[in-house]
Length: 246
Image (cartoon, rainbow, N blue to C red; front, top):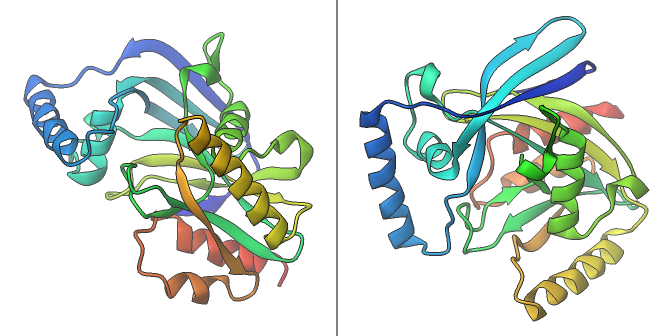
């Protein structure tokens, strides 16, 4: 579920690890071993958990602690019923619009945990985004978009417009921005392919296998025509942005 927001956002970080019951940790470890057998490229790095969420008319405050990717993926794939132990993680992403009116999403590389799936450029919070007990979600967004599509968000018009709320099957708080490119579809596709070639040449991680473009005004219909795996927020986000200029 996503909702349009116009509030002050604060992510307060406490440097401690989320404590889980031993029985749950054992289940996560067994699950992770199976994941590694299927995809040896997966890495169980640090992840972050929203332990407490507060929202009023003017402000959203999230209290965040540490966990790991295995915890996150277990909650995403298997599910954790007890809300106290879920791994609900903060992340950010941007839905880009080209100058000739195409919405841009990425198709994930087959070696990632979401092989062939559709999602917008962006990603999870990293320790690089944390300073003085606070998480800068805009820095997170800028860093992730630079890493994935080599785009400098400081040079384009963008704004966080929506918040993705967690559901029973989706364990994230997502800060979703809308950004306007000064490149056409063809220009941005060429720009991305040049960056992709650079990543391959230098043995760096390629997260997006390719870019997918949806025509503004027809985005939802074109999106529905694909049978790729898709993030839960994607269709709703496209529906919402298509209403903005109506």
